[in-house]
Image (cartoon, rainbow, N blue to C red; front, side, top):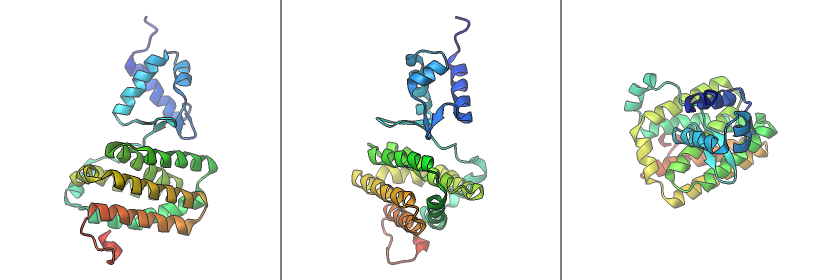
Length: 234
């Protein structure tokens, strides 16, 4: 019994393997059986640990696709708390409309075939999302992965700052609660188009598709938005 690791030790060992990449393949965790064998525990025990990690947002499961590692937590909240209190959806969308099309264009140029395979799986996860909560998680992972595929650490830091502000803002949660089933389908289909542009190595199309997608997000968030106006209202 003394050799049996505690849940805390087991979780720490699993997270360490995730951090080093030993327990990852193509952006996903190894199968449950392989993880259990590697850590010398039963599959039931491993499943319980994975359940706990899913509850706290560390991993993200999609039926038939596997278990993905969620993006790291947005950068420390404290520096952004004061900003988030003043920021409105329009402010965030202005920045996203400037940053994310460029990230998508760079991803189309720089993503490896292995990374594109992972992005394809993450795209499907947004299509499979059954409710706004599941979609919110899948959407966060999808957009973060595109930022990663740009392979520019400074751009990724800027994008992570945007995530930090959004997570501190009450309107983000209110917006997600207002998303209808039809909205989720439309947004996920746009993700699919975006993935195709990136996969085709078409930087211009990727940037344009990302901009179109973000304008749809903006329209959903800001119901009274006028499409005829400029991007400053995004």
